[in-house]
Image (cartoon, rainbow, N blue to C red; front, side, top):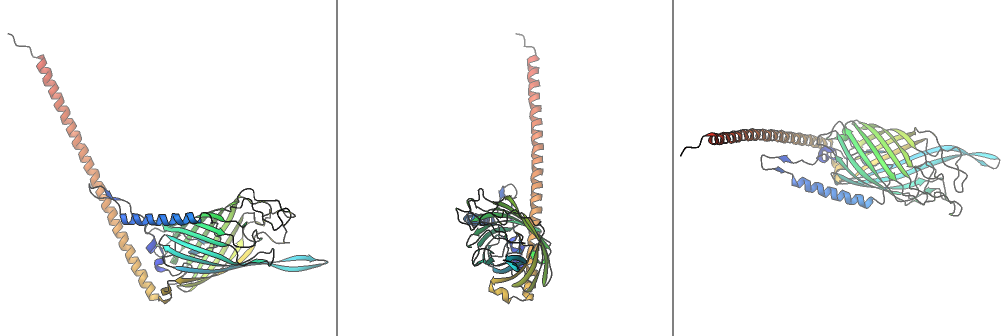
Length: 439
């Protein structure tokens, strides 16, 4: 079995993480009961997840790159298996030739937008994973030396792998964060950033044809993200404060969306992404990236080992080449013949499972044996649940029948009581009608 973006497969799928909460089941006339162990476990997960979400509530932002399960720009609702640590090394680039006037001479210049990122993900339990992603290198095309090393730091906590047992659908939610560690922000070619601590939340929905091993069958994903840039009062240009007097008056807010389809095979996965961002509240006219954008991105993943994979994709911008930046203001300079967003981008990535180290020693035979055992366990569990459901339904029917019997008996009792009351009333009337004996 070949691995993919989620590291080692097998039980990393929904086999261990798709169990839901068991509802109370009626047992005769003794009342309902609940699986207390599962409830306590669920409460611990909810408390842990809520604590982490509150911790990140001040440092979140829409995570543009995804190095965990799913696709490079579309996140899956499934979480990493507990104890698994993965690393995704990603780079993307765009280049375009422009012209600059040097006195009487016109010179051709190639403008580049290169980014290099690492993305680490750790599975905390079967419903929670955490990610940290530093951008190691980012071209800025502004200032000196013209790049950020490092750029900003991204954080994410995902609660996922929720859904009915055996269901093809899973759902989750993620809190995403951005910490401004870069020197320069408000970059041409890149999505808007103002150098502030940003926060946001992402809703996740995934579908697969194989619920037990979701990434080994056709799968699809849908993301919807709200992002608060927390940038009120920020100055976006490099001009001195007394020269550039334009500030962000209201926090910039965006709504991002992403859809992904993946068709896996033995050694290669073929996939397609569609993603973009819409501004709910735009930044001021000094921002280089204040327009909505949409990209489509076909790609392929090569999986030589269960713990190692490589992918490549090309992002093509579908949105029109619109420029709403107001140039001529102090500190806002136009790069001739260049768009605000890249027309295209080439992405390359490498996904490695770091922990557990035993995944590198697993043979194909071991993987097949684990798959067979997992499927057998799932089938047995589904049969048990079906029997419990059937037993509960039969018990409910018996209770309904007992209730109907009780209602019939009460009706008979009421009829008898009414008859006895009428009989006593008739006897009383007869006594009253009889003449009194003469003395």
